[in-house]
Length: 186
Image: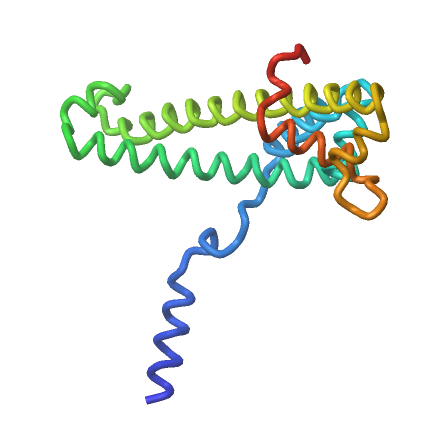
């Protein structure tokens, strides 16, 4: 009996796709996009660079984290696009084939549909990333201005550890997550 249970568990483990267990592996395009996004986040002012260091510690740490996020966004976009295309094809196969099919027999419709929808979803995710980067930079600038005005009051307001040295990072993360930095230009 134990052999049957062990064998069935082993068969189940082998049947799971490798992608269901592991994190997505970023390709070169994901790494290039991550570098560009990290450069944007880092900015070129002292305030934005300090805010960047409080969040990521180093440029390479930012690239590693962001590249995995890019790969995950790509994988999610493709998966969601495939589900939407299946539903659309099931609802009306003839219209689906004529809308998306480009060759003589329209058999490439599903692939074209998934490709089109996945690209649109990736584009929307990239635009969202750009907005978040702008909010982060603006938050860092606002926190720097607030700290410059009264550093003791700033440290008391945002600091959470015993010496309040984490005040700048806490300020940036709170303002960036609230979307307060949207009003200023990047």
